[in-house]
Length: 200
Length: 249
Image (cartoon, rainbow over all chains, first blue to last red; front, side, top):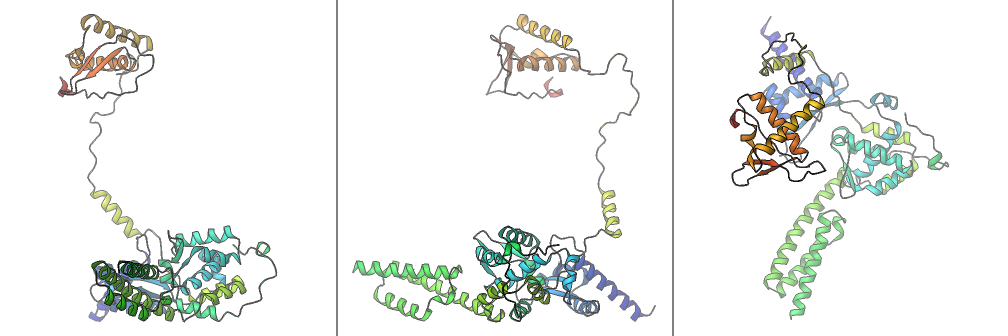
């Protein structure tokens, strides 16, 4: 085997290690820290991640890096690396991921509202807004579930804020742009109680 | 003069309170005009230079610096949110069906890819670790073998009548040989460890039933027993732990 082939094999091995660390880590939270990648892949791990990213894009995935807020700018060792989908999903994919249309509608409205309020708002305000679409018990139950998943955080001071998962999975500007572009329809003539239940 | 100083201090405290509310994001950061606030502070500090006013002035300046940071962050956040107002979002949420809200969300949502799966290499590593752990000490070195139980099991539970007879015999011994307080260890002592154990075991029943009194000296922890003058009707709630072993011989 030529030296070039050996190098290529080594590189591929490192890439597969990087993928397994990011995708199959046993931590409580998904993803992996930069220093863990450095330990397994060496100090040139940022270049390897770039190379991995270009390969992942071919199969509809990409690497997402979230920097630690308390760390210095550009400190990759303390950043967290994830693999996320690179292409948007269809509405028909939602049940496959274990969500219902109502849950995502609530999440969408809540996140858009929070993004315009510095990522934090009064919990009651958010519930009041969502009550225009769903019954209060359903709104609270969905918000609770979303908090457990990490999209939202219910604080002790009666506010609700963005969770860690939102920072990784949701593009703030894209969401707000999409909201602004919503054409909207006339308000439904049926009262909220009689609206059909679209949950799966 | 004193009244004027007090008014000035109250004003400074009011400023501090407002600035605190802004810093804790209870009110909008641009509610207060910082420039005019600084002018007022200058006027106060030029007029009154007592220690307390100077301290309050310093604290107000510190709070102003925090609020300036909050204002800067607010502008950055608003810029990143494309200056879209929350009322616009509110209106969109009310006027749009859930499907449109979800479509907007899907345009911005890229979920994390994660696998929760055990793999063969991981299982092998776990197995290697298991093998490397030191084995626990054997509970018993005695081989399992058949024993003859025709004469009864060792340490078997005896019939109640036999038990009562033994309790009666211990009680009589205590009454006749040791009418006063006597040392616990002296009473149960015997060359045969099995007999010693049996005497301690029977004595524990008599103590629980209130037929034998126990006292422990707080100074030297000496345990003494004697036959009870009156029998307690109710079972005693206290417990006495006695370690019966070779060290007590």
